[in-house]
Image (tube, rainbow, N blue to C red; front, side):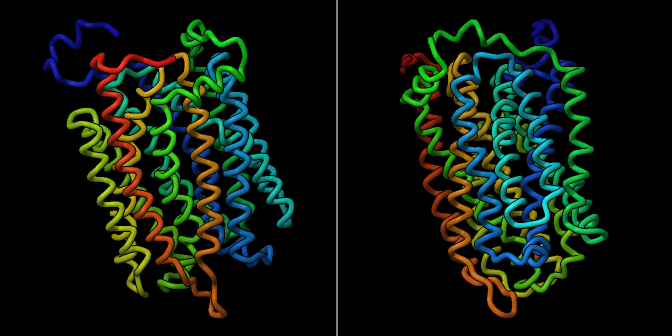
Length: 423
């Protein structure tokens, strides 16, 4: 990065993005948008898929977790090779496979077919997020990572603002298959743009010294300083995977909000988080990762407890609670991703990200199954036991905060030269 422009800035000011970095950040966010939307639309479509395929909440939970488990296994298998190839080529390979799996979901007409489609989609989709994060860590210095992680995380909000309302509209206008076809059409543009605009990302290859993919995988897994980061990732995943699959059912049947009003909730929540996300990224780079993370953890705990205990309330209350809850979640994830990006050495970054993604998916799949057993539907369709899900999320958030503090402490000591890197 050129030093001249930075000399006119305050010495402690975070460096600005170059033009190419802005393009890459936008592309990474777009691909992340497609992958997140594929998972996100399963939650609001649950109220339509379950009666359409005549499946129980437990079976629907199995469909959601099938993606997570296959993605986790795929991530582990890919981890050994993650640092041996150009990251751009890996990204395109897995993204094209992900789009093929999404198309299969749109063609599914039975529980068995949808289950198989979700497994196939997870095999490819589960690796994309780790490659995206590895590329972001390779191309952006630590002082920029809060902002780039915020841009990537904004894909989550964009999926609510643009994707979920449109998906619900299409599913109400036709049926629940339509959103998957739309995702394939839009997602295909992302593949074209990455192939055209992104340069090879291969500076890490020369640093790979392990003789085999298995040795590289085991070396990354056994690295002591990686373990607290892996554990933190697993616990932070619990919230989304436990709450989201059953949120639409809870909103419709317990809170008394009609299915046709669900798009309004997702739209307003997404718009607010799109606005707040970049602010969280700037705060992360200027104030510090841990203060923002701890504030987000406290806010998450409070809002999850409120949300899971809501009675039938007006739409405005539901929207307000959702907005505040997701702001809390974003205030945890953005600073933690920026923190975790600095944990591995560059030649281990791809494997570290792949293992983290695998742990995220596997723990998320387990969380979905646990949530499916904690809740049940009555004869009137109301969801019971949702408050217990909230308690589990709060407990996991507390433990994750303790582990994140340890990750930050060790990273700070290592950067100061107090703790030498262990290979």
